Amino acid sequence: MFKSPRIRDLLGRIGGRLPRKRRAVTNQAGALDAPAAPRRVDPERILRRLEWTVIRRLDGLLQGDYRTLFRGFGIDLADLREYQTHDDVRYIDWNVTARLQVPHVREFQEDREVAAWFLLDLSGSVDFGSADVEKRMLSSEFVTVLAYLLTRHGNRVGALLYSNGTDAVIPARCGRRHVLHLLDRMLRPRKPAAPQSGKQTDLSELFKKAQQVMKRRSVVFVVSDFISTPGWERGLGLLARQHEVIAVRLYDPMEQALPELGLIVMQDAETGEQLFVDTHDGGFRQRFATIAAEGEQGLRAALSKAGVDCLELATDDSVTEALLRFTRLRKRRSQLAAGSGTATVHAG
Image (cartoon, rainbow, N blue to C red):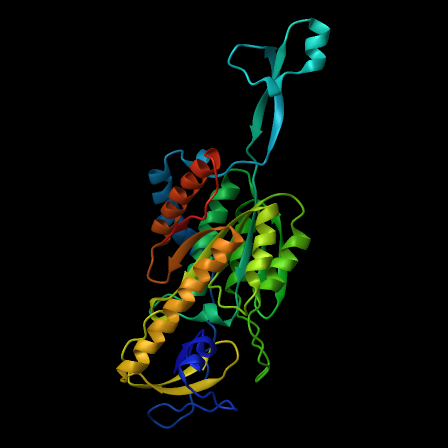
């Protein structure tokens, strides 16, 4: 059985009829397919593997570029000195100038401490993966590496976890144990939605909760496949006005082009609804690809409307390469911020 994360959006629009009831799916021997038992994961083992395979390599490739990636949002007064010709008059301290009768300017030191938050979509659609890696595992590895890099430099990271609703808020802290706790919460089995409940992902709920939780300006990573009910871009845009937001979009290649698999049963990963389809039909696959392409354009337009940067991460992608793309994304963003305008940057 093929569990599709978007059976309503894609198949419903190309003429497929969704059954009113969930149907039992049988294997070739005629026995009912039982749900696979959740695999037990060891966060410590995963982090240790990432330290050897990803983090050590990034340490060699970044070579000090960390200072250009994350900047704090405040400045501290460092010193006062006499005014020089090239100085900005906006930094003149008029009180000191009046007392000493000599113009003096303030010098500031940038606050480098960063508070980072991860808004994590752990709904049913992220449990999908056409190969060996599911979107949930890809998300957990990406978040773990980035959280480790941040906390190793003294910064704090927190997270909001969303599945059938905003399930948990992990306060912003630092340290290896905190990263392990975050990884463990991400990899816990998802609470299944009630059968035939029709409950679908609504990222607007997550963004609304984030506005209530995050009081200080922070760097915010929205890690999701953005398969959601429409209208979430408004909440994301409001969040981007208060924080520096980066969208990390998860996807699987099979979500964009359906291969020829023969007769298969597709099941909605969130509602459990099923549909029997024939992927031998070239016209069906073409309509699937067309609607998927339209969805891609709509997603990019929504992110652009919200005014956030987007880092795309596929299940057949390398976490190391994704982090290097993130490095380039941050540098381009810094260049845009130093220029005359702002623009949405996509790193695919």
